[in-house]
Image (cartoon, rainbow, N blue to C red):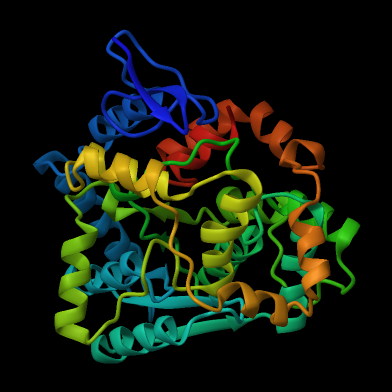
Length: 386
């Protein structure tokens, strides 16, 4: 069974369940017209018991293990915070479950004021300690600019990887064995690997070619660091929202009511460089609309009406905050001419630069075992070893 829609006069096959269409990298459709990404989500729900009593039981076992391992320690887990919905609500749930988290924030110096205030409001009311790692702003800007000059879509890749590295470092410092993350495949999905990719080697190679400043304060996660954290230190990564029924909308309403928390306009838009990457750079330069991840996930879970999601994704432009592009130009000291030159550079992908991808693929059997033991996220195994 096929479902076809017309986009700008051209026919495209679209998944009969979500809104992914034939242009999504690595997509395939079965006899029912359902895409392989929807089938992957089905399998994950079965494996983790998402939103079922079995999922809650599995999570309870993990929570008890965290409490047991954390006896006698000031903190029993590490949790990353950004001021966004997921990480803010996760902190609330951890306290509710009787855990003693240390909140960790990686400040790439591009936070919005709303995000900073959200972190303060939630942590202060709950009495949670905060560990903040602030990278040198000139160094951070140099890394972002090097990715723009490379002509690749992963402008903000350095932030996600740095947060992961900082959380591992803090966990090791306090002898904590569990890092908790607020990711939900139900509300966010798992992005196709060819859309966005990052690892330490990729960041290092791009910066070496196009950067000007040395990486002195940037916490780079090399392959040896990564293996040390998971094989030697045995630090586990847990994503509670993979097990329980989680609604981003309900979480947002709760945070607003209980903490005076403020919404920032969209998924990951609490940080200006991410907002620029998602809403402008990748959309204009690559025709890549990152809204499809959360919209497709919302349709799969019944949170968003499919026809409304199709209309928004295919027929409406992404929202761009007023003044955002000018902010990026000024922050990176780019003239109008220089900025336009960057936007018209040939489009390139991670496959054209040195990465750890081949190494991850060779170690696929090992990473499967590690994923089953929560030493790496299952999404890492699915995306990076295929």
